[in-house]
Length: 119
Image (cartoon, rainbow, N blue to C red; front, side, top):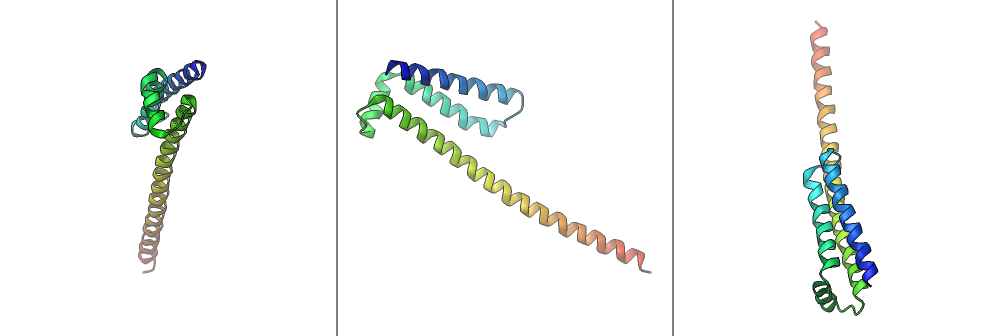
């Protein structure tokens, strides 16, 4: 079990560093990096504080502590992925509305241009 906790600690530190580097290089926006940073910190805290992990495993009713940690990690990342799916869906809706507005503006410009050239 100790080895899994050490691996989870390493992975959470790697995720934390990767997000910070991506944020510094402007590969990821601040509002999206917060979810990943919270997930990394949560996994780091759970992998290092054995008493807290025991307590959470007891609440979840999972007798195996590493299984509880993996379940929590999966749940956290599932929530982050769901949040990003909502963001992507909103962006797609906004892109469609923007494309429709541009098409309407192009139509009006073309109409004005044709009216100007008719007389």
